[in-house]
Structure formats: C-alpha cells, structure tokens
Image (cartoon, rainbow, N blue to C red):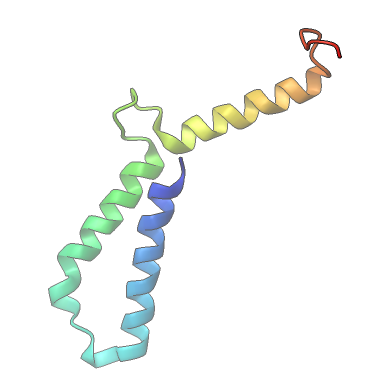
Length: 83
C-alpha cells in the first residue's frame, strides 16, 4: 500500500548517492528528466492523487490504522464464535 511512495524515495536516494560518489562525472543533465519524474511520482503518491477517489495509499493506510486502534480500544469482539 505504501510501497509506491517509498519506491520513488529509494530511487531518488540512490541517485543522490551516485551523484555524491561520482561528483563531476555524474551525468546531471541526462538524468534531470528522470529525477523530475521520480519527484513528481513521489509527490503524487504521497499526496493521494490516485484512482481511488483521491484517498491515496497514505490516507487509506492512516484510516485503516485508526480503525484498528478503535477496534482495539473497544475491547474483545462479542461476535466471536465460542469454542
């Protein structure tokens, strides 16, 4: 669910590490379109621009976590089948 934004972040971190490692030899101009696309992808995914009505994976995960917390706070389920 949250892998899309994280994948884009890891790719950007990798490019940054390569830039740092290779310095002047790094093909900055050639990779600019890729870097821009990854930044846009990360931003869109983390801001919730998606096909699921704008909820996005981050918002969906937050809602599921909140629902889980509410369920835990409510205590044991009374609908469980007894053994």
